[in-house]
Image (cartoon, rainbow, N blue to C red; front, side, top):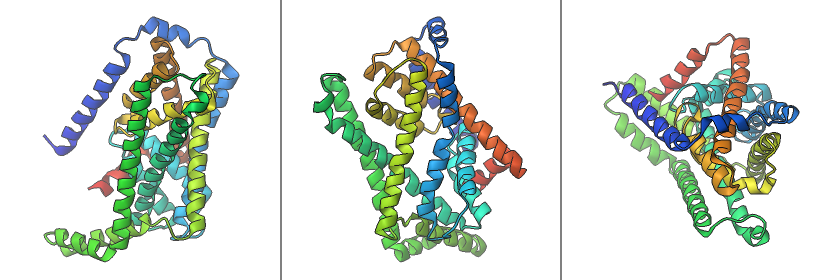
Length: 342
C-alpha cells in the first residue's frame, strides 16, 4: 500500500473515531427540532461575518511579509487565506496550509520558502494568542465564579490544555529561533542529509531551506512585533465574536468573555488534520457546549453541525469565486500544495 493511501486510511479512521464519540448519544429527531428556532436576520449576519477573518489575517500577514516585499496586495493576501482554507476544508492533511503561502508567492513574486516560513510563525502566534486569552479567562475566575460555575476537574483540564498548547507553541518558536540564530550550521546539516541526491535537486532544496529560515524571522523591529501581536488578538477576538453572533441567532446568550474556553477547544479540534475539521471540530464543540454551558447534548450536536457546515459553505463559496476569477481549478491549487510536500 502506498504511503499516501496509508495516510488517508489513518486520517479516515481518526475522523470516524471523533465522529463516533461526538454523536454516539445524540437523538437526531430532537437535534433537528432545536434547529428550527433561529433568528434568521442574525443568522444571515453570522454568514456574512464568516469571511472577515480572511481580511484580519491578511492585515496581520503584512507585518511578516513587508521585509521581503514592502507592499503586497491586500486582495492577494485575503485571497490566499480564502483559497488555503477552502483547500483544507475539501481535502485531508491540511494541504491548504501549504497552498496559502504558495498561492501568495506566485501572485506577489515572493520566494516560496519565505512565504511558507511566515505561515509557520502565523500558526505559532495563533496558538499563543488563544492560550493567552484562555490564561486571562482562568486568572479572572474569582471575578465570575459566582455567575459562571466551572467544576474543579474541568478547570484543571483547561489549565493543563492551556499549558500544553503554550508549551507546544513556545517549543516551535524556540526551534524557529534556533534555526535563525544558527542558520549556517542548520544549512550545513541540511546539505549533509541531501548529499545522496542529484546536485540539481540539492541546489533547489538548499535554496528553499534558506528562504524558509528567512521567513521564520518575525522580530525585525519591536514595532512590527507589537503590531503583529495586536493583530493576532484582533484575529481571534473577531473569531470569538463570530461565534457570539451564531449563538445569539439560536437564542443562546453566552457572555462574550465566557466563550474563550470554548474557542480554545475548537482550536484543538481544528488542529487535527481531518478533511474540513470533520470529527475534531464536532467532538470538541459538543464537549465545550455541554460542559461549559450545560446545553442539551442534542441541541449542542445540532447547532455544531450547522455552525460547521455554514463555515465550510461560505468559505468554499468565497474560495471558488476567487479561483473562478483567476481561471484556476481547485485540483490545480491542491497539486500546488502536494508538489511542495514531496
